[in-house]
Length: 163
Image (cartoon, rainbow, N blue to C red; front, top):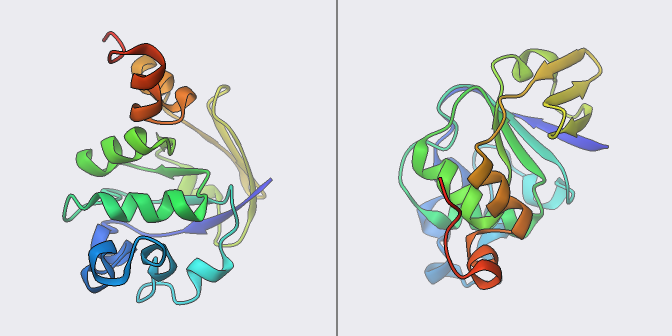
């Protein structure tokens, strides 16, 4: 069981980790502690490994800063479920091994702080208000996630998955 953190539409990467807390500014060992520091103060201290972010349209828009996703990885985010994703954010998540799954109805069945169960293989997110259908990931994305990210996949297979 994971806890849900619910966000709205157009959550940009600058809200995830503001530029003034980039790793080259505060260090590789600290930047993740500033995740959502302006948008959701206390998030980095309260989030638990395996928690799930749930959002609306265009999740991860804005700049292409990979360290926003790296911060989520360091905090142990289990998955991100949203109506839609900014493409670079989506690819950065897959590359770093964070499942990103589209669902048009997840945000309607989950409230902030709810306990939820993600059954990615079955394509379902379950919460106290019901179940949401998940859009299946492409097989190459699933292969990369199963390996733990694109670097782990390349170390294991020596090439990218066939599309």
